[in-house]
Length: 261
Ligand code: DGL
Image (cartoon, rainbow, N blue to C red):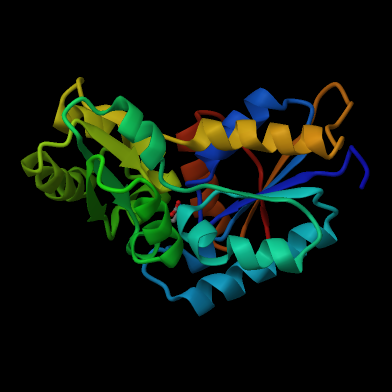
């Protein structure tokens, strides 16, 4: 494995950009290939075989491009395929899952909310994660269908987005949660909107920075960090170039080139 080979990062769409930003900040010398599977998003309401098939297409493309490690910047895909892909492909996979552990450390009243996709919350991996922490706190799961689609369309402040958020957050509010886990990478782009509804004292847990740190540790263990001075980022989408580009530009606040896949 050559140190100057790229890191592959993928998500069902633009949500994984929250992870990409931290990876680029922490490892600025690395070359990154980011794939938004926007043509097949959302993953959250799909079955395992669909997610596995899409993740396989993307993984094999990234490996063909020389990826030395792959970050699955999607809770739903991580829950569905990470264990089997680790066994099948000979490179490291770093995944993301809802940050229950940090939320337990942060909560003061013992009530935490988990916002995630239906797919993540119904997965075996999530129920194992949930069980690992026993009954020390009350964990309130909240599936949020439709929310990732709003972020995918770049509609962060749209009345429909606020309406959906209010619907899901009012359920968590009734459960008196003081800490909410953002268990889907798309939701990291809704922090301002969530705080607007829940008030500034709500504690939000976003594990995207921890994933970048985990990637750094893995590259160090494998002695495969890039030694170059500065890395590059290339963006690809399986969906509409114009729509994906417009959403990425508005989420990141600068102009990027998006390539077809
Ligand atoms: N961003 C993804 C996640 O972290 C999935 C969103 C979706 O496609 O439903 O779960």
